[in-house]
Length: 429
Image 1: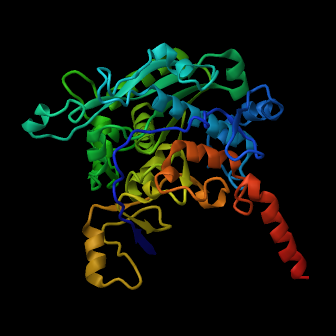
Image 2: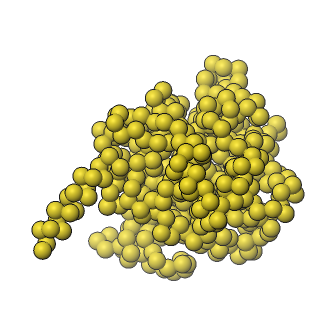
Image 3: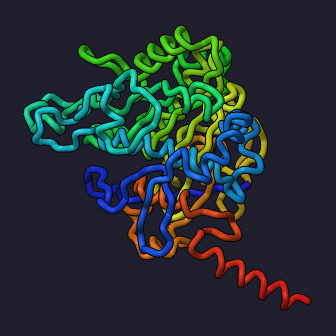
């Protein structure tokens, strides 16, 4: 058993930015230029030739078998789908008003029906059906309200729900897909919630269907607060998600259906909580899948067990050089499916009193789902980038687009790696 921890310095509060040269679409890397993207449309040779494969095996691509055989090497159909869901997160960022001086700060700049078109992410075949907002639950002193309004903004636009309506896209997917997309941290109070790293028990209304005994499932306090808190003028994110999912099930419940929840950074954590909540609330819920980009840890090992029992499928895209994916708290590598209250932490080299403190501290987390691990250092275009850029969504989509396999980490370096392996093989004869 191994224990690891990391401490990071919170970066300067800045809004999410995207280089003008990296407009996010289903992407095709032009390896002759340093950092160039061109759209990969559904009617392209690659996508068209594999469209039948996706429709026939869509449950495998949604993780029914935990993406076995699809991640290393990365299946091209899965790659295209991951990039597609990354575009939906990109639309959430593009729609958010980051300007503190704007009268519409922390809201969506676009009307619900035009989120996807005005975000310049291209045709998707999906129609947005609901705006989503998250509310901070931190109790602030009264003097904060006398400062700038953007400092004390409690409720902010966090994402949206979109339902696939295009007949050709439904045929390509093999089902009607419903997307819930969440952006990452943007407001001051969201940053404060992120810092509430201690674990807290899930409330009863989140675990009432999975089972009355949640086995000690705990999640990060700040993430849960953002998901469940409400205000006099804004219902909780949890309430809005449940309401919209109920409507979708009433409307489309008789046809093949999937829920795909995607997000970046804080949005990845909220996506995990929303997926678990949907499976816990709706006994007739279809397959629920999370595609997360650069997400922090969310809960403890018993939470991971409850996620697995609920049937929630999670694909975490992780950049090895991204510090956010290594926080909060500690991680214990344990192959057991359950953790008992008297289970000791066999951490070689740590004094007994340290192990006891770790056992008692509400900071022991567990990674969830299946992991697609990438690395900026393996990309010839990103290897010299800084710490902050390693966490950006555009970096993640660039890495997904270029990743081949663990032996050939990036398309631009694949031939060099293959040549090296070939020389090593010849040398062994």
